[in-house]
Length: 184
Image (cartoon, rainbow, N blue to C red; front, side, top):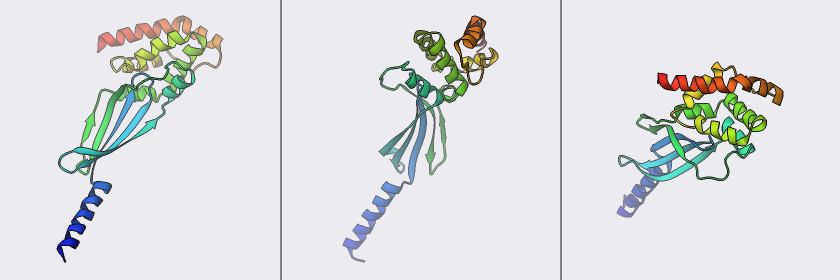
């Protein structure tokens, strides 16, 4: 094989490795302002872990759909909180602080709660709750406290039902969150 063909073969092999892989890092993050998720995939130079190609995929969650539809959060720069990631071909896992936030953002019950507060109380009240819901320090407590306060899985279909629950439910929710935060 001539040196020109050998060089071309080497270049083509390196190009194939660069395009196909074999090293990649995949991760998932969640925005702490709107609840949108984002999947990221980065191709990396083998051994050096230097990314040369990165793609992102937006993931609308139950909560981010409600936040967008009700315009609770205007246009903003996302504040991404790392949830998890993994590598290939050497399988390893990385876990971040965003696991509870990502779970709560996918919850239909939490999305229904935010929608009901927005529609039947006020957008300002919904924004206050949203801040706690998307805070990694309180999101887990919120999720369990909401269930303990027996907020319906799909929310309320009318203002009267919501107001009846809210008369005692919102105070109980705040108290349960406070109790849970002292237990942590």
